[in-house]
Amino acid sequence: MLRRRSHFFVLIDNALSVKAEKEEEQKEEEPTASPFEEYLQTLLQLKTTSADQFDNLEKHTQWGIEFVEKYNKFVKERSEIEINYAKQIRNLSKKYQPKKNSREEEESKFSFCRAFFTTLNELNDYAGQHEVIAENLTSQIFVELTRYLQELKAERKTHFHDGRKAQQYIESSWKQLESCKRRFERDCKEADRAQQYFEKMDADINVTKADVEKARQQAQMRHQMASDSKGDYSSYLQKFNQEQNDHYHTIIPNIFQKLQDMEEKRIERIGACMKTFAEVDRQVLPIVGKCLDGMTTAAESIEPKTDSQQVVESYKSGFEPPSDVEFEDYGQAMKRTVSENSLSNAKEGKEKPAGKSKPKLWPFIKNKNKGSGPEDFSHLPPEQRRKKLQGKIDDLNKDIHKEMDQRDALTKMKDVYIKNPQMGDPTSVDPRLTEIAQSIEKLQAEVQKFEGWLAEVEERMPSKSDSHRRSGLYETQSNIAVSNNCAQDRERPLSSPDGSYTEEQNTETQVKANINPTPNPNTIPTTMPDDEEFDDDDEPLATIGTCKALYPFEGHNEGTIAVAEGELLYVIEEDKGDGWTRVRRNQDEEGYVPTSYIEVNLEPNAKGAMTYI
Image 1 (cartoon, rainbow, N blue to C red):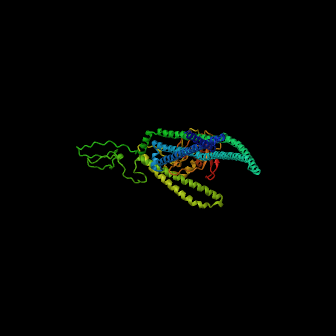
Image 2: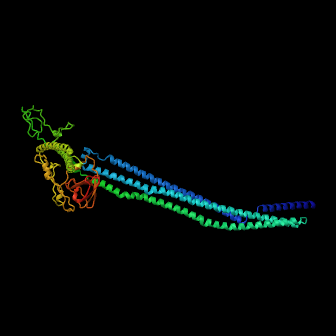
Image 3: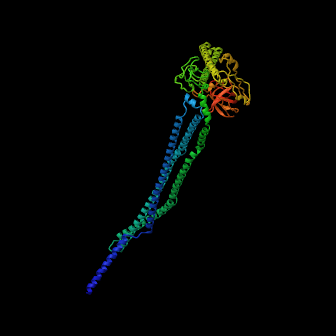
């Protein structure tokens, strides 16, 4: 039994020894981690963390660029909305602008119509301010942000390229360091094995001396290789540590700082654009306020009483009210005679059966004749007939003026041909002069005819007033200087007693206004151009030059325009010798100013182009 127990313990001892040998072999196969290996593990974690940071920054900066693109698109759409809104406002204003016809001219007499037209003009200017908003949004924000986006993308790409490049370089250096370390480790193991083999050979008495020497040389060579590998590994390790220090303390922090600066600039740029977005609206507020003030002023200028009086003046007939209706006594067989003051159409002495005669209240009867009436407008009430006849006379006078201007121009041309025969034949102008003379004579006959009808109407009207009669053709002009107060009263036109016109009268009364190079600001010409110059039926006159006001002019008279000293205006008609020049401030304001009050600069291609004061 003791033998069996000893045998059992021997088996246990053998098993334990075998287990110990296996554990030692496993330890040899799996060596413990060295400090360098632990360092490499830490370095690997750092590399992974650095790569993750680059990925996070790349995602964030890409999101920042997408936000800038979104805001830029928002500004573009806002600009398009402003443009479309301005276009619709302009179309609305244009749609309701007055047309050049008689109906619109009649409407312009009323203050509420003029206020509405002013509102339309102000609304058109209001639309222009929205166009300014759209233009500024596009130029100051959209265009600038589009350009900045390209720069931002390029800068971001450069920074991440540098970061990736630095990351790849440090990883390559680490791989080379690991390669040196493994080579050194391998050479050391080979040197140890060669040393052990040499010692075994040297202890064996059966090995020849040559084999021992060979083993010794092999061991020395392996030790030399291990020593060289150690030197390379040590040298590259120092180099790697320096590069690693530069990478984590200089290169990567600089790249991160550049990315941070880029991000801060992007955010700052967005803030500046948002501020500009508000300032663009704020800049047009003063002009928008003026437009609204103009609308308010136009509304406050409406005069109900004046407008209603315009209606009265436009439609009053001039007839006297009918007399009282006489009592008809049906108890007696009598005939009622027509009262002299009655407005009945029955003739004197004609009798009608009793009970069948009723007075006609003609003022309240509508005129069923819608077509054009007779030439003398006898189908109209007296007051309306007087206005029509006066308007016809004015139109004829305008035509006479035009013909006379052509006659004067042709006469000057003929004189030039007489003095310089090489420029043309003087007789070639005679047919046209004869034709114009006949036309003037015909027009003057028409004027006499209509003035006769006008005199007849005014004689029959209950209250005659010659102050309304005027002839735009005949005006006396004087070069006598008067004070500014006196200059505001225009002379009344002169005509012959029977209303006719003779060329001799016009020649005697019409005097050229002197053009004084150094005028006295207290004196102005006393005559004004005729009213036909303000005919709105034709297109506006083209600009032929500019002028500068040398002295202030109040312009109280009809047809004149007030100017301030130093004001610049456009010339649309030069002085025809009467001392007045027609100027324009804008599309709606034009009139005459004294020629001696301005300095005129006509365009080279304008008629009679010259510079005069």
